[in-house]
Amino acid sequence: MAVRLRVQVINIIGGRSMSAKIVFLEGPNYCGKSTIIKALTEILSNEGKKVYGTCEPGGNLFEDGIRRLLLDKELNDKCEMDYTCRRFLYAAAHAQKLKELKEKIPEYDYIIVDRYNPVSDLVYGMMSKSKEEKGPYKKYLISQNIFSSFDHSFLKDNATLIFLEISLETLNDRIKARNTTENKIYDYEDLDFKIGIRDNYYYLAHSLKNNRTNIYKDFVPFNDVHIVNANRSANEVARDVIRLLASK
Image 1 (cartoon, helix red, strand yellow):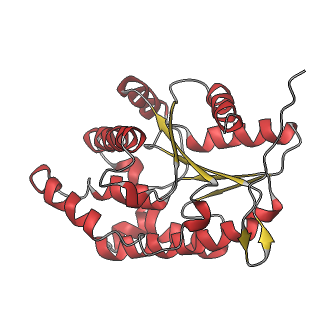
Image 2 (cartoon, helix red, strand yellow):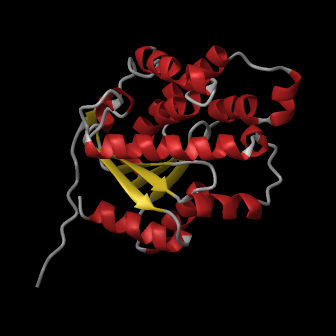
């Protein structure tokens, strides 16, 4: 009889043992991150696992405040935020998220995070300039990686980044079906912008998955990067993620 053993990764953060597997889900708007996280949480909880779900930015009082500043369309319409200011707000939220994760690690079996801000910064930042400027601006973002000085060492061997990949057909279908009461700025961007975000994620995911020594490695300073097909139901995707995590 095969016996499955759950290997506990032992590390020390302020004298506490590290036990939770940390999962970051990334991908373009409409790839279903929030719905998939709900499905993951339900399946794992039913298996007796302790699961903590959060998002970037968000999940605590400080980050929720930053999230409202960054994503509320009405607020941004009244006061267009300088992009450098926007990036530093995301960085401040990420610093708080790292603190939150360190505190939660000993208490849970799984921590699931909607987005990983260093990656989102790169993907969305490249869409903030015209096509003519995009190449030089990408180099600027990489050279001015404001997340690179943060201490991500506790994530290196204990975190998994999963890119949720969707086709253009699925993207179009989900945009048409979108029904939200949230007033988020990205819901009001045009189709070309949304396709560009999807394409940037596709490019970045495959670059990181296939070549961990490339120029983007500093944006993901831990070892485990995967791509999961998100063109299916949330439950199907969630079970694929769980199988992937169980194989580690």
